[in-house]
Amino acid sequence: MQEFEQWFTEQVAPGEKRLLPGAVCLAGTKDDVFYSKCFGTKSVNPESPLSKEPLTPDTTMWIASCTKLLTSLCILKLVESGLVNLDDDVAETGLPELKNKPILTGFDDNDDPIYKPSSTKITLRLMLSHQSGIGYGFFQPPLIKFITTQAKKSGKPPLDGGDVRSIFDLPLLSEPGTQWAYGCNLEWAGLLLNRKTGKTLHQYMDEHIWQPLGMKTTTFRLEQRDDIKNARADMTLRVPDVGTIVPSPTRYWPDETKDDMGGGGITGSPADYMKLLQAILRNDGTLAKPETIDMLFEPQLSQPVVETMHNLLYNFKDVEALSTNLPKSANVTHTLGGMLNQEAVVGDVFGNGGRRRSKGTLNWGGLPNLMWTIDREAGVVLFYGSQILPPGDGPSIDAFRRFEEAVYKGLGEKAAL
Image (cartoon, rainbow, N blue to C red):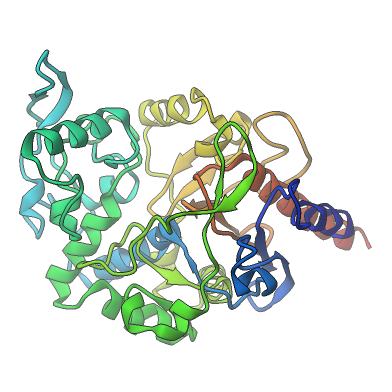
């Protein structure tokens, strides 16, 4: 790891050429964390006292879409208990808001949306694997245009309300089950859980995940946890087209929302998240039945849908962002828990680097450039925690690739002894 550590130390050195604010890099087995190294500081703002404080595994961060793994696990626990079925129509079983959702096909000359009806039910299976046709209003261009034009016509701020129904009441992008599209599926799934159990997503996770694993610095309710709030790293921004990093004028995510957002609402520490990854790798019944945990790793996409996923991931100007820097040879698909590479990974999308994760590794990440992996074949989990915008930051993705390769090189060297 020496070469990797030397490289990262150079990238976080203070000054105009500083490439990264810092990151928490953790690697573990099912039983222990065998690598824990933190680089950089909690802030790049020289006027902030946090610029003198080093990042630690207990530094808290907005983990954004790393939240999705926890929400998916909660939904599978509902399946395990018989409260929901993966293949039922969610519009009939708790989410009437999704009944007869139209498909957005374009806009007329007045920028009014053009729709066509959908004919396929939306199920939890399709939602957890991002095949439902549901998108994100900040991500896909048609939905961005839909939101901005509707806001202009109504005179109301876009995405106003702070709750799932107000923020994510959007038309579909495609017929359910026909395309892969990253969207607000887990936010809606969290609302379904609330209606089925009578508990908020925060309460359910606390009872079924956080308390059993001792995750004491993880929350949806930041306004109720000054300790977690005060332990946060600042957000950093990479200046477009220039590449320098500066203090971000916004944290991007509000400190308080009406609903617990199952797709991205958690603030927590890398140390806590590692407990989750290790528990999933252990699969000893603490979180759910072993067969329930196995479901997180089962591919869900048909080959035609896989092709739509690959088309999106690899025909994109920032190809390393959506593909999480995995080469096409990784043959990725989507499961109920995240992205899964169906072949072993060597190098990145540009042909750089060496051995990485094994075939069948589950992974995902979070908007401010957080990344995680669960490699059951090698018995290794990785977590890379940072707070830098925009998402898909090239230097951050490259840093994670270097971290991953260094870990697997060490594993290979150890196995050769």
